Every structure is written in structure tokens, then in C-alpha cells.
Length: 245
Image 1 (cartoon, rainbow, N blue to C red):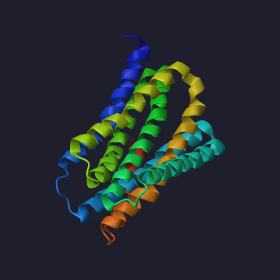
Image 2: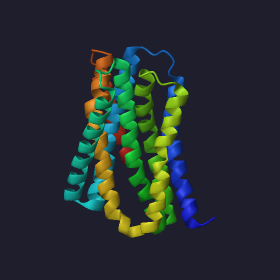
Image 3: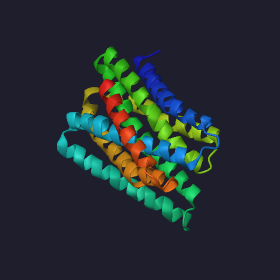
Image 4: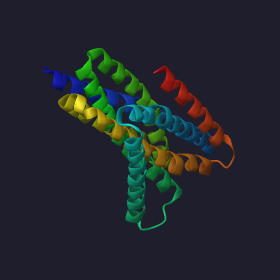
């Protein structure tokens, strides 16, 4: 098996296993209360916010510099806003509460898929630099993808998607990492500036969806403070995960 093929397969496995493990959470959600769902969505929003703040953006700063990172962040948020608008216009009618949650899960899945590609680039480039670096990056990224998979399937389940459908969508969202690993090997060191910009772009998409969709949806499910408190708790967990791994 060639080095290119092996690294590409590793990228696919990391992406699919990471988001797949998170997506499997949907099988354990039967008939949860709104309070429980509000807590989980708030927790997911906090984790996502911390991932952007302490993982994606610092890495983008190191690779691409401040200006490219800020531009990438803004373009990512703008792309999410445009996609959000397209989804809203395609329905032509006001979305029901369930449809609104389904839209949130779909948008979050798209944003995760977008940032899985540059993370795949990082894995491929890491293996080109040193095998141990590539393996380390693969483990870290797989662990980071688990809470992202959870954050995606919960609103999809609330929106009426079956556990199997949500799980399969989570697996699909992980596949761009394999393509990223493939191109990471091909372009090697030249890809580093592109990786930084791509991470910032993905961070912008995730920031838009977390602030504009996940956190408000959590508060919509339960009018108390439970969603906000779990969002703070999730943010704390995200910090710990980013620093440990």
C-alpha cells in the first residue's frame, strides 16, 4: 500500500470514527425532556465555542498570521449567513420549531464538514513532516470530533430525524477529512498557509452557527438558565480538552 493511500485512509478513519462516535449519541436519546435537551444543546454550544477560541483560531494564527485568520473568520461567518438564508428561502414558509432544529443540525453538519477538510490537510502534512506528528494529530483531531458529532445529532433528533439517519449523516460529515489528508500529502509544506486560512474559515462558520443557532435554540427549549449554565460548563470542558490534547 502506497504512503499516499495509507495516509488518505487514516484521514477517512479519523473523520468518520470521530464524528461517528458523537453521532452514535443519537441512539441513546429516546424521549428526553426539553430541560435535558436544552442542557445538551447548551453544553454542545459551549464546547464548540471553546473549540473555535482555543483550538482552531490559535492554530490558524500560528500558520497563516493575524490578517489571513481574521479574513478567513469573516468569510466563514458570511458563508454561513448566506447558506442560512438559502435554506430559509428554499422553505418559502416560516419554519416550525422542529424544522428550525433540523436546520440547525444541517448547518452545523456543513460547518463541521468544512473544518474537517483543513484538519485533514493538517494530518496529511503532519505525516509528510514526520510520522509521529501525523499520528499525534490524528488522535487529537479524532477526540475533538466526538463532541462535534454530539452537537450535530442532538438538534437533528429534536427536529424529527431518526437515530440511524442522524448517525449516517454524522459519518458522512467526517469523510472530507480523508480528502484533506490526500491533498495534504500532495502539497506538503506548501499547504501550511492554506491550512491556516481554511481553519479560520471553518472557525467562522462554527462561530456563526454556535452563536446564532445552537445557544439560542437551547434557550428556546427551556426558558430557565439551565442552557446558559451548561453552555458555560461546556466552554470550560472545551478549554480543558484543548489544553490536554
